[in-house]
Amino acid sequence: MHRPILAVLLATTTAACATTSVMETPPIAQPAQTERMVSPILTSPEAVDTQTFAQPQVARVTHVDLDLALDFVGKSMGGTAVLNVLAQDDADNIVLDSNGLRIDRVTDAAGNALQYTLGETVEGKGAPLTIMMGNARKIRIAYRAAPDADALQWLSPEQTAGGVHPYLFSQGQATLNRTWIPTQDSPGIRQTWQARITAPKPLDVVMSGVRQGEPVDTGDGRRAFTFVMDKPVPPYLIAIAAGDIDFAATGPRTGVWAEPSVLARAAKEVGDTEAMVEAAEALYGPYRWGRYDMIVLPPAFPYGGMENPVMTFLTPTFIAGDRSNNGLVAHELAHSWSGNLVTNAVWGDSWLNEGVTTYFENRIVEEVYGKKRASQEAALMFANIEETLAEVGTHAPGTALSTDGEYELGSAIAYDKGAFFLMTVESIVGRERFDGWLRQWFDNHAFQPATSELFYEDMMANLVRSDAEAKSLSLREWIFEPGLPSNVAAPDPAAFAEVDRAVGIYAKSGTIPAAWAGWSSAERQRFLDNIPKERTAAQLATLDDALGLSGSGNNEELFLWLELALANRYDPAVPQAESFLATVGRAKFVRPLFETLWEQGDWGRPIATSIYATTRGSYHSVTRRGVDRVMDESE
Image (cartoon, rainbow, N blue to C red; front, top):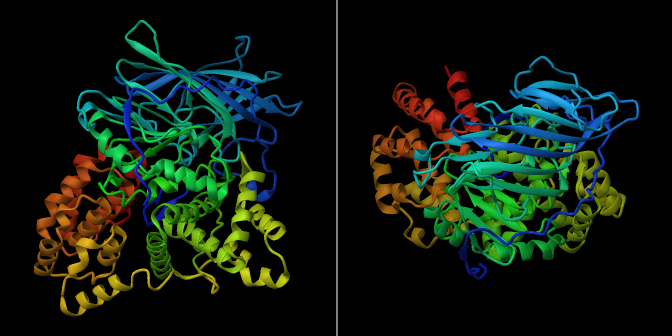
């Protein structure tokens, strides 16, 4: 997943353009192998997931077979889930996760009814679904997801680019898939899966599995789509989207889906994807998932991207026309190794997914776009860490990479501190040695869960060569202690030398940099994020007139402008903020802007309240909860 907002969140982110061509679907894969891989589970104390009710050491799900119908009128889906169970010989029940699921009937493979109980609901976690399975090791559950299932967002035609057909997408990380799939919803319990999904014509369906053949007309105005994921994945990576979407190839194994009116811009923006896959493989081994496709979703999608296998979900807000924001694509691609191939067993170790991926992303960017861009993006990460530590304190427990899972400090720690940990190790042992170690980590732990302790032990066994080197690396301090160790490999001070000089000149004299037009997006973001925060209306007007900030087509830059303007109660920016918040659902942008308005008291709170009354229903539950907390906690 790419970059959550920088706030305390409950733990519950230049190559030649490949030729693009539009086609109805990507090449159809051959049927998946029938023999399924079964991943191990970790039994050490630090691998116990407190966010699930499951007892995987007694009985666990190894495969899920879904047969579901999409109901756009009722905004729900229902059907059956058949679960394959691996259990101890004397185990006579299995505990699943459920949050709002409406269970109709549970049977064994022969159709015999099985008793079940739905336990007490725990806020943010749902309720345990305990099935008395006896000797059965295959369970069939008939059920329906609730219309308000947190993982699912049902969009009306008016909320789409085309304006004619409805749309559905899911977002399961971290523990939301239990609102539409009855299984054991834990990243440490990997499962293969397959699905048959029916949807009304003419909608297309994509999932985070390989499509099997062409859709089949069911004779009732609907079509059935079949998907298979024959590699065990954590359940949060089961994802679905359905709508009026078309496909464009960007390479022999890469392509992008989007609404027809968005497709051309999307395909141009991700045209470097094939080159990114090649760069990633050269670094850390073969891409093991077959195809790498993407879907650019409507603006309501709450994140920058989500690394669902074979079908990365992307926000349209990254489209800038110049590929300046497609480090996002590099990030989600890198998750195909760190996160999807090797996965944190518990959410308190999410840096194993996000920090390793952010490091990997930077290496891909360096290979495809050059060292300067990679250095600048690394410097932005480091500034993010410093800003967060200054805000919460260097000894705040949430600033350790490995936490107890109760909270995390957005992107600055799990993502950026995690990346700088690996950059520091690389700087000490050398890139060649480090790359060899990281590649073996992916190879030796492929399709398995991992913990911070396991990562540390692997470094000690397979990377560290002496006690002196172990001491210089400070591995345990980096992983398990708060703050930033003194041996950190700080970013290149020259990365933004020109921009930082321009910031100083502007702060002193108000002189606006003439070089702005030639700057990269990273350089522009650095400037906007570092100029003095207190500006008069006249100063803001001059800045906007000179730099064209309110007309920027780059949402990262536009967001920084709106945040600056609203923090200074700049009335001319209010209509644009209203329009932005009404059309963009990405939590990274939405929550901070509402927070900025809310902090402005009598000026900003009426504006925030008015906008939110109109936009709240259009946001995904992830975004809604973030904004709700801003307003509730700030009363």
